[in-house]
Image 1 (tube, rainbow, N blue to C red):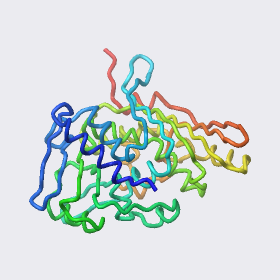
Image 2: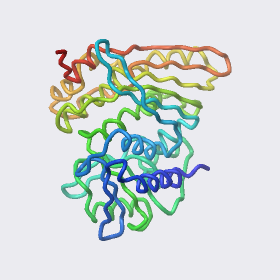
Image 3: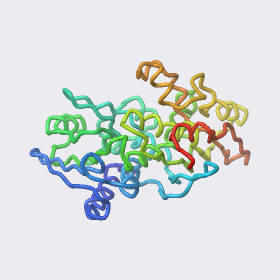
Image 4: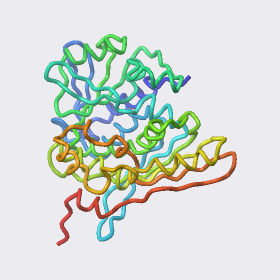
Length: 320
């Protein structure tokens, strides 16, 4: 069994070795936890974001940069390819760990989730477990966690604090923007799962997603970064699924266009909901477009479409 934490540690070590070139800062808490700041006080950047994405996906994906055409202008894009989509995305990358200790809050993703079994029912469904002695976590937050936060995370993972390694980047940072766009494949798999599809039949995946410019504070950037997937994410999945007609039904229902909240920048939807995620249709969090190749039958189906007009509005681009 692949150990996502062992694979993630290799990337973390590489990131520490290249900290100066990546514009990140290394910190060590009094309890021994090692932290890489990729955008709170440090500058970070696109390459730091690629390392965050590699850690999140346990280095089980090829991650590279490209461009995304929005008509009169372009933005950077991240391109992902993986032959281990369920382990990379669901056992590791999925941001399913809400970490709250006193006044600290951050969204945790990456390999350490597999040790904390957060959420347990997901790991039971995909039949994955990891028993590594070191834990690697990516935190999306705007402050550096203190010892009490690291102690709680380490305890939940069953490791000593000195065996915990954390990378931190805010949403409103270049590194944070890259790692959120790099969740495109995972967002599609999660949507499939929410519809009742057997995600273990997804064998390979590819995606290209635009990277949002920094448009404001963390909440505003939460809007534009989500829009990159909702209105610009294009995913391709190779599956082995016996019932082709049933598969067609799932492919039709996955894209974000099926959500009643579709049609305007996510920040506007979020604001109208009183900044309460629970008032937003969960089906909104899905790629704009998916294509699925069923490997046994040789059939390929596609559904959804990108929406460049909303991306331009979300990014606040001014043509001069």
